[in-house]
Image (cartoon, rainbow, N blue to C red; front, top):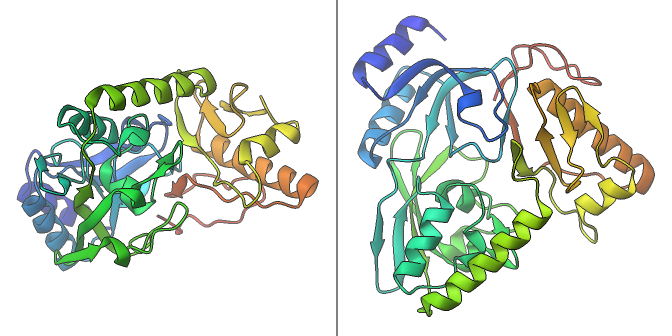
Length: 317
């Protein structure tokens, strides 16, 4: 990727593009190498323009939300990382419930719904992600999932063209959707939300948050649940029964509080975290014959190979 083209991108979108941006400042793990460039668009129109520029200049694109489910390798990401968070967070009330831009945090969205006398999003109030990212992976907690409330999704392809998906076209499954893995970025979501007494919603949110604080290591950098729930099992329970609770590699540790979390206990590298993930997977597979799949997205380039792996420096995103 030529620096000249990246400089042209920055000149075209001043105050929006950052070159060599440290990804540790944009992920909840608080680690990871730099992005070749980062764009934080202020509007859907500006996002379209950035996508069109990148496509025209053959710049690779990587879309992210607020980085709460992301492990960026130590070599960083050789792409234009487009962060959909913060500014793109407008919410409008509708007859069905709400329409919201993809950059709003789930916490802010859930509390906006409560203030409007709408229910259905209480489960999402403590999930540390954005609406767009939550829809793409069908995020869920405490018996609720995004599929339960999504009415429609508006997305842009990497050419800047708009696509609309009704709920039945999203093919929602456990931590997956029709958009996942495609060159599409969610920009707006329509939500079907029933009327509900705000006091009831606040009580539910308070209960869920108390349960999170009691069971999850919220005081340390992490990406939440590292592994998907395997059929018929709970990942955290398998990891604990394998004797891995508290296991540490470098600055990465299987949380002593909740074995489904890997936490950064101080100066962890992405290689530490990835090596610990592999160790957990291999140990659980050997003991129980169950292969744990990661829920966290692992992207970017390694500076050095992770134990047991032969990735080359050219492999990215």
